[in-house]
Length: 216
Length: 216
DNA sequence: TCCGGCAAGGGGAAATATACCCTTTTTTGT
DNA sequence: ACAAAAAAGGGTATATTTCCCCTTGCCGGA
Image (cartoon, rainbow over the protein chains, first blue to last red):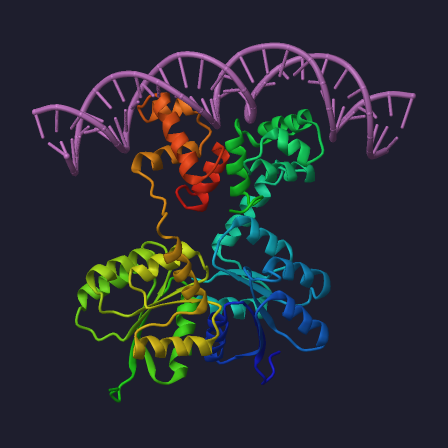
């Protein structure tokens, strides 16, 4: 199966220190070569569009990047190059992101505090067998399919309202900002309190921040 | 000045992929060797206490680590080993953290998306001249000394109150929780609104989260 | 030592803002 | 055309915010 040429890997990561260092690490494994490095999803996609016939064995994709992040890049890959194998790399173990990366086709998800040995194993595994999941990730997948039935879904208007609720505006001001009656806003509030199992606007703010609806 | 032996560097970073890769990068520069790597501040300090006479030319210290983070480690170094030169490494440019790292004696602060060339320059500069600051960091330092006069300082009771305010408790409940009259709580609230230039409890919650008084 | 100031803790009262419940009108999808 | 949402209103009870005042204790200067 394997030819005498080395496996071709691409790194997409905005942390230049990391990506350049990682290239050295990968080289030290012997069987691999890093053919390209990109500092965000945008330049990587540009490259793919220019060079759509290049042979690529594996992509190491950082999740947190400027311009075009790992998730958006993964979504593009799912639609345009589902043949490419991707291992997502990230510093955080945010369940939501991990699930999304995998449902968009990532073949593995590694934290950056993974040991080089595991890392090497993951690369080999994805290239040979097609996937590699750590216990952390498998656990999340199982956890997800079990709790997927009662997922809370917020409508667009509700999201807008929540964002406004996370400011010092009064409900009355929010209503006029959204061109709705204060009473309608009152309705949004009440149904959200019910849905999210909270009792006060403070609870709503905490929920919004925790679930990354608003950023601080 | 320089002997024929290489400069001795220690890396403290929980991202094993990064730290091992970085070691390779540093080696590739030629003049340096990584004599030890640690995965958090605690094990690093343990090492220092066991080997207090080891010659160390430079420490590369990650800011975000489990167990004992970069800031706490820096504080320990300031008190116990102010002779050691440290370059802080981080993915985020949080002004507060940067300032704190530097006031605790860090000789440089680099983002992980720094290019390897700048990185090499920073290492050389810190070892030879004693410090290296990027424009980003210098800008923050200037910005800081200009606004340092009106620094907000919160008292312990106020902090406790703020933490309670970031829950769904009413002020009355907070008062009884803190064994104070609701009126006293009202006084805290009013003076904080004034001090922090906010108008509502929502503003207080946002302030608390932004300034890491409470965590979400 | 006395006195003024100041900070912490507490109070009254009034104006808004929030929260909750229930009903009516309008839109919308099919 | 009809049921289901969405939008809006009425009314009321609490909570929050604002403003001004009072006591007590402590500390530093005259």
